[in-house]
Length: 140
Image 1 (tube, rainbow, N blue to C red):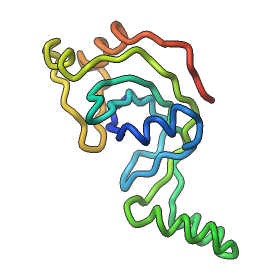
Image 2 (tube, one colour):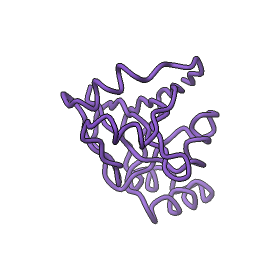
Image 3 (cartoon, rainbow, N blue to C red):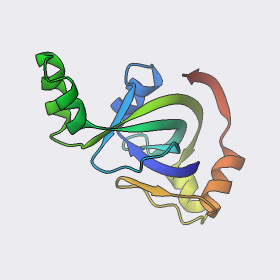
């Protein structure tokens, strides 16, 4: 399983954390299970959660599959304005926070992700593993 950092707006993070959001939509994304460290953007500016993303679904294929369901087609079409794929959120785990200031101070080449980037075998992954603590809230 590969590991990456992805950026999320605070409202999206909250919808994932409470279990309301069960798919993550992106324009491009690999077709494999991915462990994601969640960077939450302004005003929070911190890494503060871990996701496990599963199977990648083509929104175009879903649109064809559910073409008899007008409501579903409308929702899928709305998502297709900004995304091509939906990935299943298999698990969310809340962690302690590591602020952007602390990440920069640690000198581990952390970059705020515009979309996502892989961190396998990089110092930033070890830093996350050493510094983040699970706070107990996990949604599967």
